[in-house]
Image: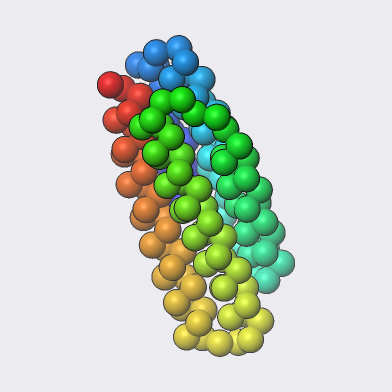
Amino acid sequence: GMLSAIGLILSLSLYACGESKVSQCNKIVTVVSKFKDAALPNDLAGLNAVAANIDQSRIDLQAIVIQDQYIKGVQEVLVTVYDDASQALKSQAKAMEAKDKMALDKAKQDFQATAVKESELVDRFNGLCTN
């Protein structure tokens, strides 16, 4: 799935971290890895359910107290990415309901863009814990 790379790379990169950094990274990994095997549904109920899960993860993510300023930076961007992902899924559901093909395509593109952002974050995060 879109997030499987994140979980994998984060777990690999944690070995090199100092103790407090590890636990801070781990908290983010725990939230993010929920989506590791999530398949994107093509039906209305499924899309709304995934959007709700992403909303919950965004709340969980925001609640984590991070001291390390770099990890905090990634945390903040991830929160935004989750927000965008959720919005895109909700738009997709609405477009599907309205049978609006143009809106549906746009929502799918928005979600793809979010997925790309996410993998860029993985690379950044990977660098953080290994240094």
